[in-house]
Image (cartoon, rainbow, N blue to C red; front, side, top):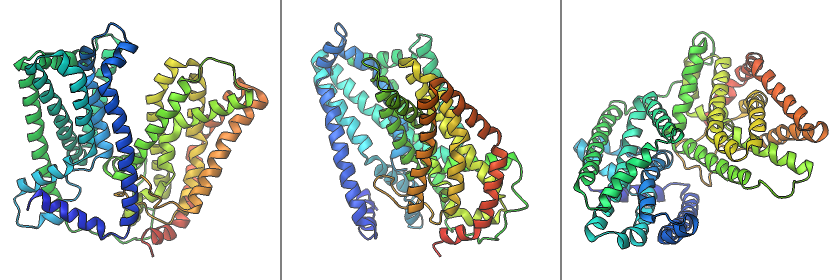
Length: 502
């Protein structure tokens, strides 16, 4: 079996799917969007020297490019993790064929590499090479730089495969490594050390100068990651082979007995985070939320100065931006709530998970996502527009204490499980009239209250009031989660039947 055989199998699987038409339209739209934004990046790469001359006169374009290439690679890795298909996602049909495991791994890695996230970086780097590198270096230096750039893209591909395989077994190690890398990069920037920038300049500056040591380091690093990804993926295939018979646990209809205490809450919250990061749809939904937050953040930091808007408009803009920037990651998750667990809801029932415990775990996941999103955008918004710090802080607490009670209560009326392996783009599976109407009404009420307080009582009183309401909601969370748990207990059989599509 070759890679072409697997591609033919994938094509037949897609064309025979009942949702092929919708998937085809969504894929074409996504391809057009990728072509549009890709052409923009290519144009920026081609005119990079002119842009540098206009924005930063006196700077050497090649040196500036070399200093920030590693930053681009670091940013490409999480994009791959959220968007690119895992190398072992379609392995089950091939495990029982008379094929050697290394051959299966190589074919699946080749299938995973056929991605826009490989094509677009290569095309952009080619435009940068033609406009910036080739005119400023010798033929040997330009060739070394081109090979090094291709190796850097390959390194991110192998690193993504390694991280996805390790994540399935040791999620905490991946989170710990990502946190450590973020601390090192941020610490270097704050202290003026610029560790990653210096390493990038030394590595690709050496390649442009035709030195052999940087090329050797890149070859060795890429080869090491390729071997590690290959071995780790082989181990993952063996574990899948040992568990190829899926077992469907029947509902016992009970929520009592096991699953008591905060240890179970933490375990279920970690299960939520693993579902998010292991599956295509929740990953893409959260990435879409981050992109939308970036758009809102850009609007926030570019609306400084000029004539002050009317009080009502100023209140609406500040409240809306603050609520979105501090809670949109959590809103993307809490829109489906228990339906994320629809495929294994019977298993939760069989393990006698208490309803209050499940509600608290969903609430904990919402809080973690909201705080994480705020931690990403608040330093940027606060540094470029300090007047947003206080509203964002107050409305973060408001989001944590007031908003989730409505969505967690609304979620008990969900009857359709979410298909985790589908793309999130142009996909409305799992959404119902109740979801749309309830979400719209809930967010409208959540934003109207702070805006009304702002306009009627002033900025300071409004922020203090919403902060107090949010803090009160957080303090009373044991009470309202218990009440929602009782409602969930009454609805559990109807939810389980709906999730089984009965």
